[in-house]
Image (cartoon, rainbow, N blue to C red; front, side, top):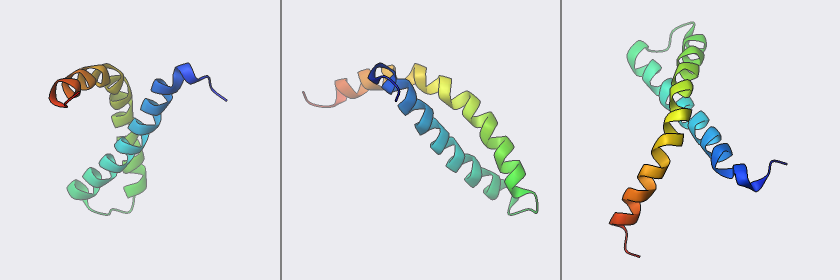
Length: 74
């Protein structure tokens, strides 16, 4: 098992994997429809999206946590 100290990174990895997978699939379908090579196009779009999503989340989560702590009552 992976050490608890890496939980943030593992969570971010899985969350961005699933979110970019769903969103890229929806966007490919909305923009192109269901083509014969839909799965291939979706996979390539997903990989590109995930490459951007994972490092973005690592940078954005601390900022989002600070914003949430200012908005939510303590």
